[in-house]
Image (cartoon, rainbow over all chains, first blue to last red; front, top):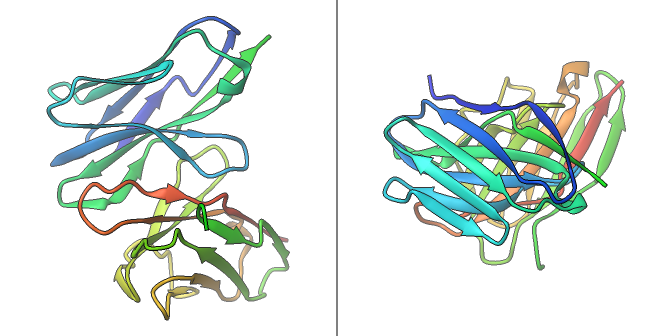
Length: 113
Length: 114
């Protein structure tokens, strides 16, 4: 069964600190992996997308990595800001149907002043 | 419009009632998707439209759920005989046609069934 698991479930850090969120997937055949940021009560917004051949992708203070061999991805946030407080969702698409996003349960990040 | 819009933003209804949730996709996006998100969970796929037709409705939980997109733009998700378990955030997304095109999400409709 195609699944996406994320850890930790929740995380609290101080403003200015770095953090790393993890994503493991069993989706096959793999097409691409996205990280989305979802503010409370809002729809998800895309941060990065990576295909099979890409190992790293950056978007400002966000850096995503992908290891297609171990089926693992991480999202590293540098110099966190209060506005980074949100849920971060890992989303994987299978090559058999790239329109059907398979979502992880998300990591809820809280950045404290 | 500039983004995907959904109305209403919140809907409170009583068990057994009928509800309609509306989605206005980004202009020019021929693909449209509905998802359901329970509290603390990731969104779950419901249905995918290519133009006016439902290309994949395998995620609809039962026959109380139905969605239409009669003119290939605005879509309506319809839920009959609502149950308390239907309470969730309903998200709509749209994208350009083609593989790997990014889905842009609306703000969602929070449905509460009392």
